[in-house]
Amino acid sequence: MLRAAALRVTRPRLAVLSAVHGHPHADTDSITRIAREHLGAVSHQAVYDVLRVLTAAGLLRRIEPPGSVARYEARVGDNHHHLVCRSCGVIADVDCAVGTAPCLTASDDQGFVVDEAEIVYWGLCPDCSTGSTGPTNSTRSTDHTRSTAPVTEHTL
Image (cartoon, rainbow, N blue to C red; front, side, top):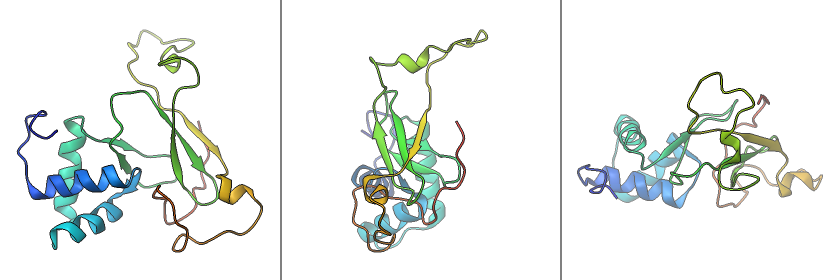
């Protein structure tokens, strides 16, 4: 992937790519922690730099739901959207509701050439919607990384 994007293959880039592929929607602190498990030592700044380069090259996508820190995912090249739990902050991918990219047709594009739409669906995840207090961030096991604080802004 790195070579195909005309990027040098380095240990930090491989570690960051692996972290994001293994933990979709991870934040920078989580990616740094995971990269350190593989590399031993890597600075936050190095991880930020790698994330910036990989995002610019189109190998990663940066998302930032309102009320959340920036998160990264390796699912690029499609027009998928996200579900965000209002309670625990877990994020999940969701394909467009109809067809391949219906969200790209704005009711009034005002002359813009639209090539991407970002929609965030808000609600409660299955664990939080059961009405129980549920596990805390430190004890809940999930394939998705969530914010350390509940998302409190809800705008579309």
